[in-house]
View (cartoon, rainbow, N blue to C red):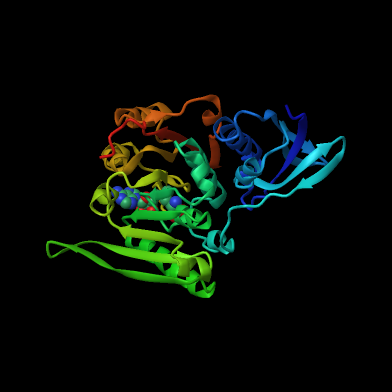
Length: 356
Ligand SMILES: C[S@@+](CC[C@H](N)C(=O)[O-])C[C@H]1O[C@@H](n2cnc3c(N)ncnc32)[C@H](O)[C@@H]1O
């Protein structure tokens, strides 16, 4: 067996101060999930460390294979990887999957945007949990965000070269997403074709839809190696009217926090808490579950201030989904602001389950 080496993983500096303070712990939990799923448990002693006054994660492992490195490169918190011998750090080359300039993820700023580092973490942890996690590296996982807002998950999926679909009820958010994405495609001179307009059924408009086919470069586009984006403005409970059953490998979504951004409760200056995402999830999960392929995974983030983990896991289990509850999956809770403590839960559709 290959001798054990020591590695140090320099954390991405986050622009968000609150997230940055917790990022080492979140990165450790993400690496633990990766170790248990695609790295064959070969990493040991994964720990938060400080080297030269800067936070790192350190771990011991046999020399990583090309495929191990390809997975490690995509960790949401990874800035750089080093091999550590005594006090010397030697860079290990990591090649991220990223197919496009990162302004796709970073330009948009708006109230209610899900932090893009956390969105990447949620997508990663969900993908690592599905039956074919290695497909993340080949672009062969299809992703749905059924509460897609202005498209943070869709943008991250595209960045990875994955086909992405979204559903959002709010017309302003849908317009903002479609305007941003089309403008970005033009500005970045990405070869693509786009169509948008109302969706009509039985002489009635049931929603609006944007479909985009793009290529990572002109050659891939010409060869038909394209990425498909399909976003719909509709109520998520109607998702089944727009997408085929068992057509997604991953469902990844950040649920409403139950906080009215920008509004003020009568007696306080802080954000007002309204309601838990449970009624929405109870109604929508049977629909989402039908859209998921057997072996597919669903990753949901939510505000623990308005709903308990046990309540979410009960709703998922009621659909026959198998909730991941090993230790690494319980390490993602983190504070977002005074009204939001966010956590995530991942569940998998058994491979024996019927697709429809
Ligand atoms: C936490 S936000 C998601 C933010 C998104 N990840 C982003 O960064 O833009 C939740 C979204 O769910 C949408 N939503 C809430 N109820 C919905 C429903 N029944 N159908 C579709 N969308 C809904 C809200 O309009 C909101 O945009």
